[in-house]
View 1 (cartoon, one colour):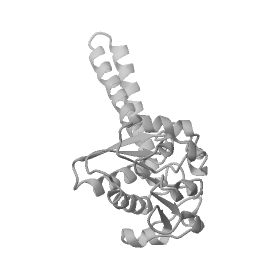
View 2 (cartoon, helix red, strand yellow):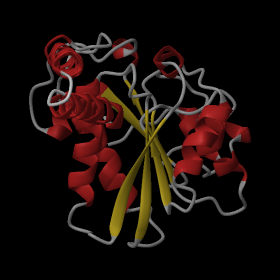
View 3 (cartoon, one colour):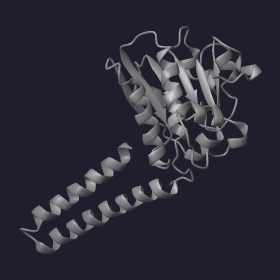
View 4 (tube, one colour):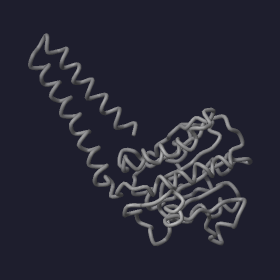
Length: 247
């Protein structure tokens, strides 16, 4: 998300610089304006392609919105306070489907909108999207994301958990803040931590959907969620090791 607007601002600035430079040197000015215009055009075409064809191979549908909707409401029941920063950890925005990331963030933000004292902050992982999809993100990448919002009252990951999550600083504290997870890999690296209450809630795609939530999702959020996802809670409800889905 942020990378797209930064590049767009850069190319617009180049175009403006070219316009101003054209008064002194027509060739330099036209060259800069051309570079800016081409850069903006490439960004717009890339954005349209991602929305229309799924970018990273994931067609846009309402699945991620349903997952974000349920995680948002689950978080509200886990918060120790209704004032502070909520950190939303997202896959690397340089390679992920931009429309999917926007949908996850915007849906989550709408759930929290009635509580203006909760401020939603995003942190993108600095790793490869393939590692997120395979559940092999190194702990270092997660630690860097956590440091982007170090004083958050809760963390919600839409990029699963790191490969050695039990060593993650967020899970080693005596009284960890709420940590909720959407794990697109469908893995189980989080099972021990959710049994211990260090991860409060995990949402994973149903096994038949692992490898991508493909196909248009139709219907209200609760129907989409029940059709496509499983939710595991801790400490209330059944243990993750026994595989009890909710709702």
